[in-house]
Image 1 (cartoon, rainbow, N blue to C red):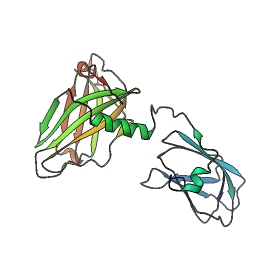
Image 2 (spheres, rainbow, N blue to C red):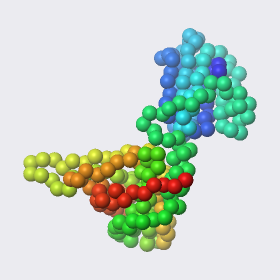
Image 3 (cartoon, helix red, strand yellow):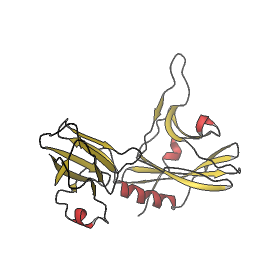
Image 4 (cartoon, rainbow, N blue to C red):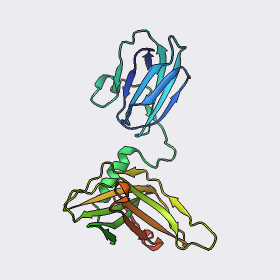
Length: 251
């Protein structure tokens, strides 16, 4: 598909899923994700009249969008949408082909569906902690397609809303040996919920997905939740034996 761009105006590309990768065929082509938005790419020329080039975009559903970029003083269209309700461009897209995303065990759509399934699956663990009228409990661990789903139930017993600014999972040594530094390895999720707020006198279950892992014998899994400035900080210590109780998530 031809994508006309110009120097004095920005072309906006709206995709149905989050943008995972962008490759520009030339340094004279500028491309960036819109600030605060994951599925809108802003494209323009770096100078007047650039040579023909190309642009490749991979989105969270594992699709590759390939554009032939040409310079146009007055582009006929400045906003292109590939959302399902944009019938013409969406159905007439000949170059939209599947792509295998490295490091991502599943598409965003699949992860969202699996997170919902794990949230409503039976609970079988109850590792919990409480501080300052807020409690956190690990209720279950499920695995599907090499993704482990941790269900955290957060209960707010106060009248003040609890909004954690961070949720950390990391492996930490059991004991610090003399003259050595205690080792911590932070785990990076492939799925986590955004804008988490637990209103006063309510509870909420949060699902977080990680590439599957086990816990070395000399380490523990630490789960931390905390507000800004570490006020109302919660910390759970999970043994390797609990992780080995992981169950298969049924469709």
